[in-house]
Length: 229
Image 1 (cartoon, rainbow, N blue to C red):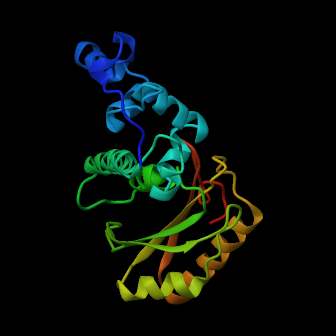
Image 2 (tube, helix red, strand yellow; image 1 turned 90 degrees about the horizontal axis):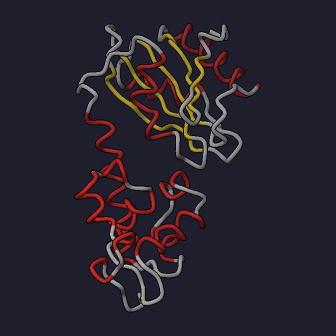
């Protein structure tokens, strides 16, 4: 049960982010102020802005907040189920908005096209997710599937799973991608090994592996550009 609340109207001007947003625009607000607007109210002992700032401090910022479950959010003092769902709804809207600029049919011409398509979904994840894009003869994306979710340090995927999914979609080629939760996209020896295994399997089946992209925090590495394909 949430504590008795303090509404934004009861607060001094510096703790009233709605009024600041109306006057100066959303870009002028801090992360804590924007989050305070989502959660709407604080508790008897602290304002919504102070509660939002404490939440960001406890979660080490926005990156970890993105992946928190409802149960994890409600474990934070002052965050009940309603506030947790409001936060999650705001985050999901942000993710969807990031994808709306992409055309319905995406053509992969470069590593940047892959990171534009997958970057916002993968960069905040706390475990490695191995994703495959399935392409037609025009390099247009005809399908997408997460084939493996690994530990914090390794993602395990077998070529059989990748190419079974590719054959089902009648793919002409594929592009693989996975995230590094550390934020550093430098390929590991395991990344290089699985890339070469996938390339060899694809050559046998006539389904080319065009690239394997590793996505970090605002950066990415193409194993093709690095000379591993």
